[in-house]
Length: 630
Image 1 (cartoon, one colour):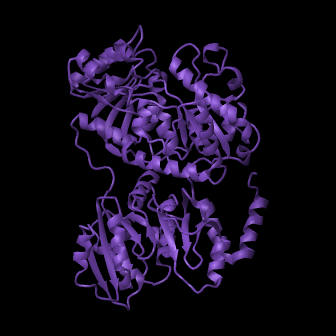
Image 2: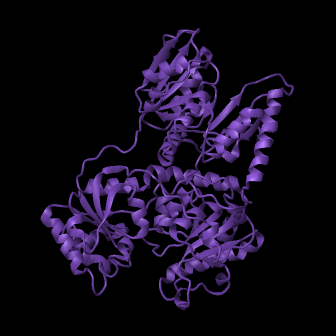
């Protein structure tokens, strides 16, 4: 329901009664934290969808203000909408026009042209291929580039079915990329040079990221967005009949079932969904509205027009997964190459598809685990930053490394008996470019500590001694001063950190573009009762005002400019309050690969334990580390 002034006042009064002025202040602060996702009305989770209200229910994703990663590079482009959105966050792009390119070429580092049907908002329609393409405007543009020494790159994202259509255009460019790696030898043979390579689709973290709206996440069941071809692509049609047919068959067991966003609504029977699927069509959405819809379904479906290529698969697999929703796809050589089936399910029969869809709609744990694993792969290998670097490498361009990779884990401890645990935790971290900064608070480290660290595989260790009279904030600041990493991770000496913890947090720092990341949603193990609870689950993948102190990660420069307060309690909370007040953004990432540990107590319920249980969701009796850390 919409938030009216009266309802807002009632909510404020409730917080005042429950927690006084401080709780009201916290509530107001969190209401002002802007998210990276569009907010939707409560109606998204109820009732039926229809074409008349789709755009209102799923508003467009807010425009991101991120600067391009390689903003020093000026790149002229001819791109369709989706690619323009994605590469626009990599380079400083300039859309070239058929009539103004002569002056638009000034100052460009290179020109990037894709197999666009409707390039640059229709300006190049029918000019790149077909009976009238490459047009005179295209050939004159690319000839001028060669004359002026501006490198040109062509990317055929429509291979293999449109190889011949765009081959003449490819022949006019210096470097050629194809979506189908199998065609590299054919391009080389037909073009007479070896400046050809594969360039698959990817995700753009600026718009394809798991940041969640405040409500309606996964409120609906299964969605498909695309077209039906009754007259061509028989393999794709067979896959749609299998996968969408399975989704339609199991829809009766669900609240909403399958809902189809069709790209071609009209009277042309060649593009209309047949039979029972036609009843599942709810309308059409523009791309930026669809980016919002991605986050409100439990499962999205994908089929493949090309099944034999190990590099060509639909871009939606990367985009939707990065946005936080599982994709169930029919298998192809590329889907198997890019993702294992525990990350992106790939049923081969209708029966298998039905069971898979029912499982994923039913189980949030299954969805979250699969998506997290697949996202880890995307952040590491399949973003448009990776693709942009491939293009720049092909041209021999020099560029600065786009993201910091060196991480210093700062651990302050006043418990010598925990040193072994600290070494074991750090050694297990799979992120390679790491350093351990150990702050010994009030004790002398053993003489053999460096040898023990080296034996555990720790190559980079800094040891800082701080007197016992000094507060914790001083210890942390001394650790930051001693650190050499570009990024600082504040870690505790007795909590559980999975092997992928540093790598996952570093990825969150990148895709969120936040000033500081951590975990507000997290698991906590109450050892006295051997209970694991999940705290603040609603704050997962949200921009927020507070994350847990043992999970802070930020650039070293942030902590140099904003050191910890010289206090023993609440130094991490005070830091975050100062950052928020200065306009910084804090992101609460996923709940995995960290478990806060509450130590053993007497075998009676303590007030603190009761408070924790009352404000968290009991997740398990007994601690199974592989469930939380993977």
